[in-house]
Amino acid sequence: MRDRLRRCGWGVAVAAFSFPLVVTGCSRSGQTSGANTPCDSPGVTPSEVRVGLIYPDGGGVGAEAFSAARSAVQARIGAANASGGVHGRKIDVVWRDDDGSPSTFVTVSQELLHTVGVFGLIAQSGTVTASADRLDAEGIPMTGIAAEAVWGEHRNMFTFGAVSPKGESVSTFGIYARRLGATRVAVLQDELSISSQEFGRRIAESLQSQGISVVRTVNYGIEESRPDLVAAQIRDSGADALVGAVSAQTFIDVYGAAKQAGVNFKVALGAAGYNRQLLAKNGPAMAGMSLFVNYTPFDQPSTALTAYRDAMHRYAPEVGETDSEVALASYVTTDEFIRGLELAGACPTRKAFIDNLRTVKDYNAGGLIPSTDLRAPEAINLCYAFVRVNGAGTRFEVVPNQGAPDPNQWCGTQLPAG
Image (tube, rainbow, N blue to C red; front, side):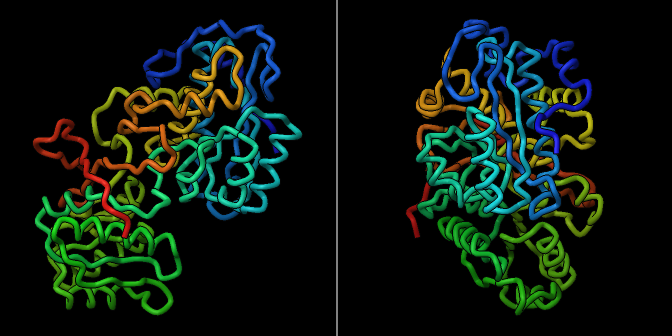
């Protein structure tokens, strides 16, 4: 296993290219005030800051979904280093594979921190929970994808779009469904997944807050795993809307079967599936299906997305498809780590990183995500963008929020905990 995030020639490429500041709108290239400044913080030398990256790489649980994560981290750091690094220091990444295992995450995180001596961690993984309390107690700065509720429970852990650990819902999904005419909804959730059932509850509460009745809840799994049988239940319930807290393919299969059974949905809202490869595979079966995202949709014109794609092509050319949710989220959370290093000052400490980044109330990764308040880890995300598959099942289209200050964002309010 290679220790460093460096392909043959990548270090040369970083030095050779000059990347514009528009990449994220927050990193400041050419900052030299920290260069050659002696600091005794872990991982900090006069010329570099060493950062740990953990993600599933070896074929374990989650490896396929996170396959683009390392490349996206590489792209954002490559762009930062080409622009002069942070306070004159280049960022050097040492990576480890957690194999999709919580116990392995514990082992490799401690190795990176206490043997390699990294300053902090970028964790693009779904196995953080078992390590979270210890890393918080040690005061370790962390950024990463919000794949677990624990990201909203610790002051040292930074992400975006995290699920509130207190169980609150937001009205945003209900506002969207009501605008499209929904009145009666069926909720599809995974019988074997506690997180799916929790999200199903939250999205049901969101719809109910807008006067939409939940007429059927289907636990998809061992007892009920045939799309045609589930479709019959949905048809018999009289639902005119379907929401799903299940995998993308499961939702597509049930949605398609329900349409074949004669259900005419006003809205069918899935939690996953904004993926062109998935659309190419399923085509007409996805026609009319809606999806929500907590970032700027790939099908929306955006200078921030143009800069992101440029960085991916320059510094991670091995990734053929840049428009990936995991890649974008990994890029954004790496940008978040860079922002923390900037705010930590010319001689960064872990405490300064955490304290100063927690003062930011309008972080948006240069326009890649809605403005996010980082002052409290438990702050709940109120705004989403919605995309819908066109009638032919050939492309995604951004659904505008007519009359809103930002027509590409749908924002609601926080609801009381259920």
